[in-house]
Image (cartoon, rainbow, N blue to C red; front, side, top):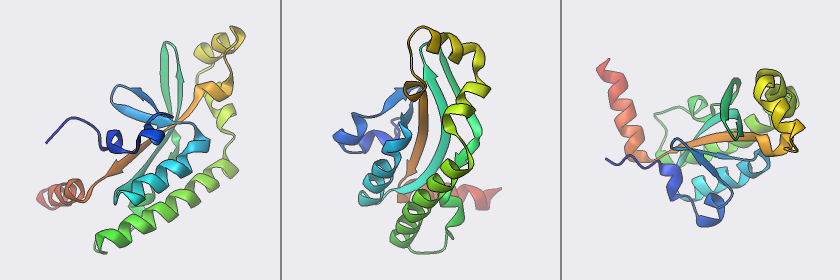
Length: 151
């Protein structure tokens, strides 16, 4: 088993848009649909993720603004069906989150001590707003499912 996250296997044009910090890959919200599609095209399950602020000296998570599409997919379905369903649910969850939350406002309210000086120095809220996204392969899922039955 490797410590390299599966997200590192996504296509180069997807990785070029990512910000990688502490082994976590995050993308601008507008890029998440492309990340979801690329993962599904590679037969990877979209697990989801959370809204984050990523600016110099600060990485913070708005864990109440999260997507968890894989949790809504029954684990007993064939892998390919689960991958497709999770991708479809990812798109719907992201749309729902964006209707329910103003992502920029959530970032500003959750991390004012870091965000306000960043903005005052010329940074933009768009450049501070990211969404971390995780994927899983079939082997990792089998390992995860086995660990659940051991508990």
